[in-house]
Picture 1 (cartoon, one colour):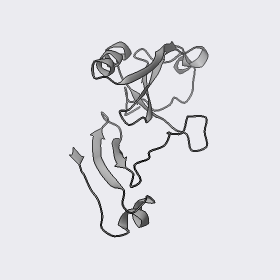
Picture 2 (cartoon, rainbow, N blue to C red):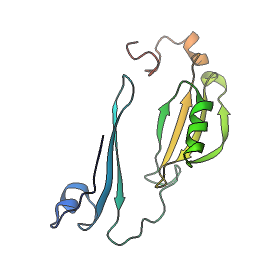
Picture 3 (tube, rainbow, N blue to C red):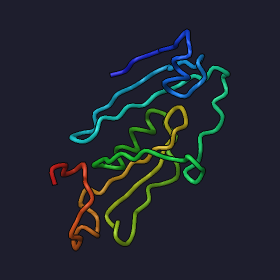
Length: 140
């Protein structure tokens, strides 16, 4: 579901969210990610109108969100059809992550995100005593 816009006439935004008190939350969306976590994102309109540049992954405070998809090619096609900026080409991981493919993209407001797919598992899973949690098999 989605909410917004939301603004406050007092200093609530500064106290609660550490943003300029005149900032507007244009949209707040909530998503369910399969059998895993719920995901919440905000689109802000800063009071001064300047959103500046988002930090790169290599910058202090840099970050990205990754989402698992069963079919990377279909997911990329969906992003492109919706005019989402996809960065580069799909990458095939090697070594322990062999079997995984991934690609980065930017949200409409510039946030870095990643799609990851390993429908047949990753190489390390064949011999690892402990496996990472996977949205493909959430109970394992």
